[in-house]
Length: 294
Figure (cartoon, rainbow, N blue to C red):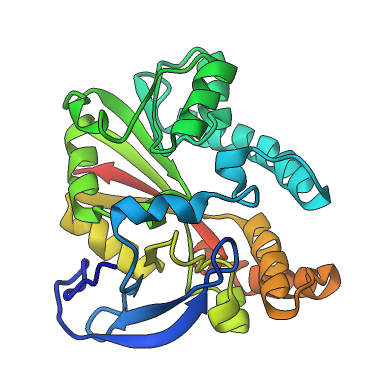
């Protein structure tokens, strides 16, 4: 296990235990979630060493790596994902319709394959060998391993996207610094992450599925993510809410709480969360952030 002694956002040593969370996906182990008393950043600490993290992804329930379509829940997820892919493409294509699109943590390649079919030059980075091979085989993509990531040339990409990936990245500062180098002048960094400041996170507390310990190492709010990215040379242009995530996460959270998904209650809590965020995308269960390189 690895323990951080400083907050990665503000470097304060004043990081204290907040609550405990259970790994509901694989091991049923308990992990500690801590909060920085200076900047309010929240993190899983201590966490498994990097060479131990792989086993926590070894589950058919981890859809982005397994692409599992068995069961009604996974089928619903797949249907919504394919609809979301089109929206994601429209978003990034509206920012810049030319230049390389780098998808960091591309999983099995569904999003990047869609982008490539629309005549964009693409490149993926994926740490999971199994997911990487699927992306290459199914979509004929150029996908690098994590070890190959540092070899990407400076000023070579117009857009870097991370769709629910940054919360998994252990070497946070080093990776963000490399993104800044890879992006060309005025390039865009698009990041989607869960929002532990949302109403559904408040409703479910430590049982909120968005914590997903220990796979999620960091737990962001708009305030802490903006502070972190600005310190690495990016400026926030826009936030966009992800309203479907409140329902998806509430279903999983209900299962954590009772052993059943309780769709009616989950739908109600998801609806409440989206209603609270109706005029503020920074309050939704997950948020897409659009940053530009300074």
